[in-house]
Length: 453
Image (cartoon, rainbow, N blue to C red; front, side, top):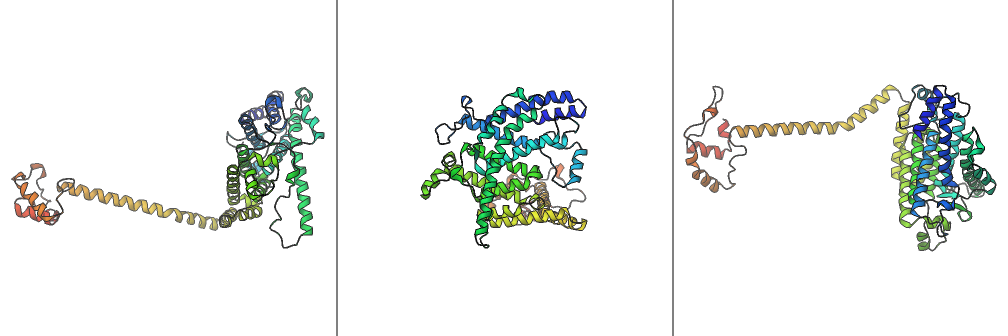
């Protein structure tokens, strides 16, 4: 998707609108085809997602749906902006630099001037795609789409009716799914507001939790552990790389952390009725624990990011981690995020102090390495000196003095009468040689110190 969009952007920048349209039409058909596989149920192609009436999916369907969720993440990343809303300077820098690596594409990389392929149209697709992905993460599946919206989705399967506007084909597929989730979200918010008005003002522990009527949800399909993990990773990636979505993505992950998915096994063990038969049967007990751990790790990562302070969302992330029993980690992460956010607007003196602090943190390792190097050099010099005196790596005398003397007496006849010519002492070398038994015993008793004197 990204390389194709770059080719389209190159054609637009070279004022070849017709060529850009020819490249964009098959690209729009590809996007529509993937979205159709994800949202439009087609039993003939094995995407019904309900093999036994309880939401269990075959491995082929799960693999195809996981790939579609990952593709939906790429669509959101490509059809959105890198800069945060209100940060005009950052947006200007990125537009002027022809920014982004070759592996990334955003709306800043798309030139203006094309009559059909506009930033506004693609940004609308990205917004609906993000809301759809947010709904998949919060609910754990796709809610059945309203029948009044189905004709639009079915008409999107006929490519001939869109003419020179392939963008409408994508919108007719992604918009109904997003609106279905937004309707459920707005209803949940209304119920939460009504409960807050009637409840006591001191009860704030349930204020930010979801109030979805799970038992009444009618789902088209549910996410398994693999596809659910991909949706969580997608929300974390979009929050980090697309600051525009940070607050909404952080809120979605935090709400799901405070109200995690359940399994039929845990409900039966607790003797309580499940939330939704289709949702509970899709995940096993081990899968639920893995997803809960991933949700907590994602919330902690986002809370540590400076965007949690600048873009918003640190309050609910902090509350979600506290509810998960991670208050110490949440306090530390929030403290680091606030410090880093303050340094971004601080003066030169504060930044210099922070640089000195980080240098001090790295200094002990540097000093220890230098000390280790000096120690290694000293050991090497000592070994070379001992080898030069004939004591390094040579005869090792026993620890017992009696055994050492016996070894010396047995080898006394092997000593030469005089030192070799190459080892003769120079005019500056005052070391004594071993000439008799007394000097040899002296060398043994002094551990070679008499030879260096």
